[in-house]
Image (tube, rainbow, N blue to C red):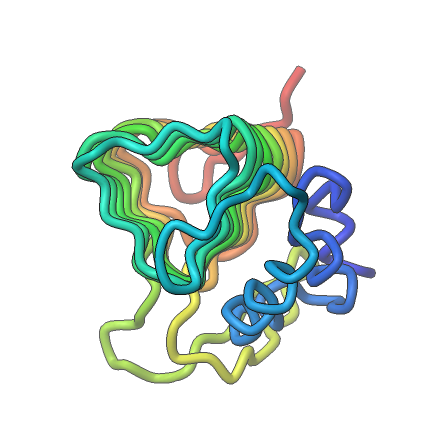
Length: 219
């Protein structure tokens, strides 16, 4: 099973050319910064370098109060809103939203992904049209600071050899307000997560996560 193609439509992100090289998407996290510097050399004419290692499409909307640290690429039609903090090694896809007081670090947001209100996205990948409700957080470090292992859909456990890894959130996923996605969480495409959830492990595609141990298929 190629987990990358199972979770994400690679034609919906400038980072598709990076992700296609990996069976497991978390393997690309260490290479995001390097990829941005290489991809920047081939960006179309309508991208402008606004500061060191930061490239922004002319049609993107950047609040004057936002802080963007490189390497970063902000794609066409994206919005970086009031007091957002892009902490480096970040790709924000076309028409994606990084909202009020949201922090994003070492992550990929596919086209039309939205993290619009008080979110933290660290060492994570959000698929096409994935959406976080207010206050959703990706927890990217275990409390014991040990390397993170991933529980797959079949119950097998795979070591990532990463100390920092947040979540893989598939295309069309909706995550309810004030939810925490624990380190190494994987959420399959077209799945809904109830508000106030504490999620870990693998949540299958086309499902509704109500609480730990209660996941039902979408009708």
